[in-house]
Length: 460
Length: 144
Image (cartoon, rainbow over all chains, first blue to last red; front, side, top):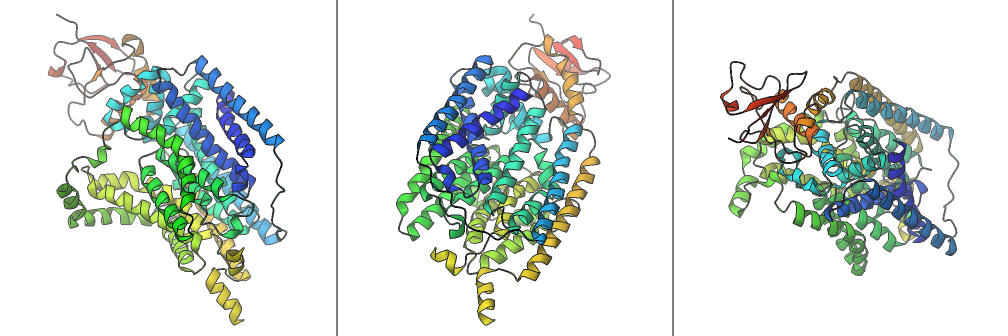
């Protein structure tokens, strides 16, 4: 297990070191956020390299582990040396009032929530070490094919329930860590799932600025619902895609000026491009997200007469988009199974405009939405969404508006899938609504707690 | 006073006293929700996957290292949750073999209780080559 932990830490530390050398850490205003972003890019890059190894005919054996570890150590050392030689910029920490007793009370309350929330995945792991249904039917199963069969892992696309069209970030990451561990430890995907959950928390709290009370409140609200901690134990692809969604949004330059101190816009766009493409490299929903984010950046850049800035988003995204294209062309060239039978415009519009289907979806969603979050959290989705909308409708709610625009696009995307699918739509809603909503939950929490932009900050 | 109200409307910043109350409410709600989540997690039934996986793993030595291995669906309700879960468990345990729910392959896995007790015509031409303690069986069809 220690070797698996080392395997997880190596690319994260290497990316941290690369960020330092390239001064990308100034794109984020907090070390916690930088660490979370290094986790995103490190895990994503290592999964893409694992996929490349398998596609080139390699296996995840000892040789792979040595090559992989050597690569990350080399990257870390070289970038550390380069970073140390470069002129260091002075820290750009804005003065902030000392925490009050009320702030400390909130922080202690958050820690209590966090301890309890961390206990949930541990308890669930003890009762379900292989994760939830989708973990052993889809993600860990693909990882087993990769670990056991090497280049013949593509045989797994013949298994219809394994959702072959979903990209392999999660499976490749699990298989890679199994290779480090030298065995298929059930603790490995559980640890990875926990790392994704903690990274989401770090992104949200780091983005909202740990020195503010809102960051601690947002952290507590984020992890409290059972849906969150239950999916942290699930070992599925929904939590990582949720991480990449929120990591992208907090890096976009629509952030208020107070969040931009000391950062370079291009670097932030580069990171946003990388994490948005990683969302697409994790699950098919990520492709919709990437399109929505690209549209938002183009619109925002064009408004400020800086359309050329968009290229940094694309540059950051390119390596992972290339891996995704390779996967979609070479491994799974067919459309996702939930789009079956929609190959003509008549069929598409017929399903989209089918009122009985719309009513069926609405009646299936309503009770799930009301009780989303689990026990004692019923209604939390409406409360947080209402607060986020409230923030967005304020004149200074620019951040919340940007976040909600993307969340709304994602919701429309999910709805379109529900309308188009040839599968039993009530069953599909009942089995997916909870986790699809979790994908945008951190966005809603962040939007609800986002700082408003004052006149002074706007001028800054 | 009016200016402060205007700024508040513009920024959405609530007065300090409200901020304390809202923060406290949010933290208390989070504590209650987290505790409820913990209780819910403790009442989760044990997942049978670990047991099923271990049962099917006993057939590994009798199977080819890769390729397609058939699986005999349940003779009555093949779409039931338990039947589906058992089939998926076989696939999960025996990867990288691909285990579709069909006969006609050289090797055929018959999970405990899936074949008709009084003789299943779908097993015609197959010979049982292994049986696990849990009752899962492996059949093989030899070339004539």
